[in-house]
Image 1 (cartoon, rainbow, N blue to C red):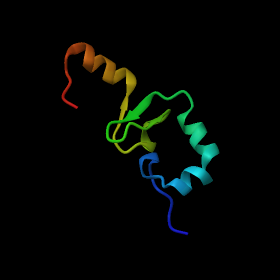
Image 2: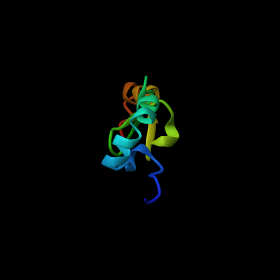
Image 3: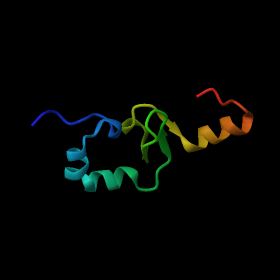
Image 4: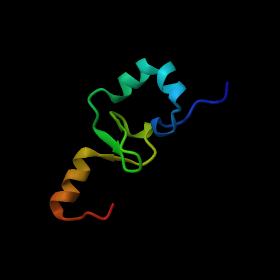
Length: 67
């Protein structure tokens, strides 16, 4: 079997199925989202283009909507 994907964004369907428990732990109470594919996680380094929900909310409130 090949190497595992580095981020949730790159997980294949079979990785999602085989690593369901890990996926559940990584996505429980998410505080980050991927700006590329909209996946969510509770730690940023498992997403390819992470941004915290809190940071995004502050940008929207300030009118800084460039991403």
